[in-house]
Length: 267
Image (cartoon, rainbow, N blue to C red; front, side, top):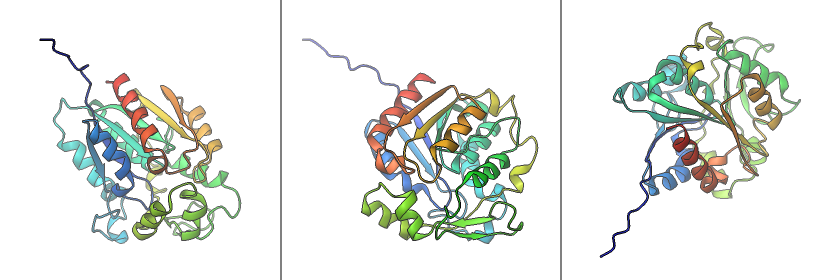
């Protein structure tokens, strides 16, 4: 009797880090696809985000905000490597986790995400982002400015019109509805992110990085994505066409395939 051997597929553990105002919930379509293919998926709710019960004032320090991610990374066995995926503001948590646990990350994937350079504090990216935004960009987003108006906002909550017309402009209406129900305010931690040596060449800088450009992104415009890429060349740049900002909702199939390809390559 002939036996057919299935090609041995490498299984990976994907860890997802959401952006501002979001939570682990935003990865639901992508997580389902990856699990169906046999992979492990951990979507983190950062402090005060998603179903994490802490209030905004309880996650005033970036350590409290990133605690769920860092605790999870800490809990991994020494010999286990994960594929870390950060979206939007989640790129900062991703880079800090790569810094703290360089041996536990096979590759850091930046999905239209803040990708800091090891030579300058992550705050530089936040400042650059707000400098480059066109006038009137933020629409009905709610900001607080504890450092004064000449500095980036202290906290942000995406507004309904901003979600409809920018962040979720090419999402299904159900996705928009879900997002409007689940948005929570987030701190940007710009002052804390100004610290020297938060990321180093020896640790974060020695890791593998792949940037995924989201075409048609109205939150992190392509020119800002391209500026981050040229500012700190990743090992590879991939693109997802017509993704908009929320590629995990608009293009879960393409993104799932792409993540698996990247994971296999940097295994």
